Amino acid sequence: MIEALLLSDWGPLVIFCLRIVDVSLSTVRMLLAVRGIKYVAPLIGFFEVLIWILAVGTAIQHLDSPLHLVGYASGFATGTFVGLMIEERMALGMATLRIVSRYGGVELAEALREKGFGVTEFSGQGREGKVEVLEAVIRRRDMAAAFKEVDLWDPEAFVTVQEPRAIHRGWMMQGPRK
Image (tube, rainbow, N blue to C red; front, side):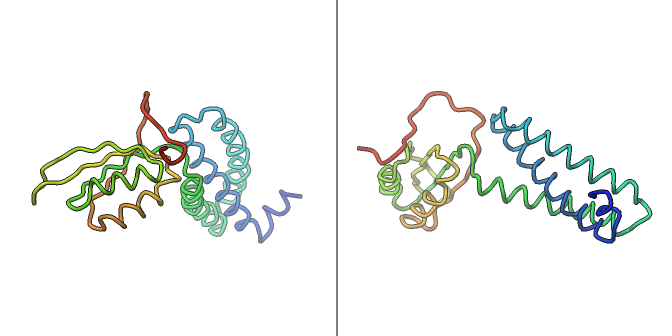
């Protein structure tokens, strides 16, 4: 039945959809593996390859059909986008925020602590004078709340986000500090 569908006029659309699924799975699998979530990644890879074999096999059988080829290629591009959107919504892992503030750095640090984030403060010298440098390692899913607090205290703060590869020791909060 599925072969008849793939060989029909709907074939290019089916290939497109299969590619969206397999490339999305591939993107999520790679990002999970990079973040050290090593037990889910192989399971995702199993289904990813099953779907890929079906899609590529059909596309190869129809190399003379531009629609099948376009369905394959555009499914790849769309799947990459969809995979990145899925991973962004999952927001797994940690992020290191570095906030450079000319105004209100100390107050911002306290406000972030009240929201449950661990913050380390440094004094610094920027191009235009003294600055406060704040660093916080937070869960990626909490980034929006941290950015909201930064915007509230210093809308002109310079903020960078890095993804820590490994974290050894330190203090991580589950909720507001007592």
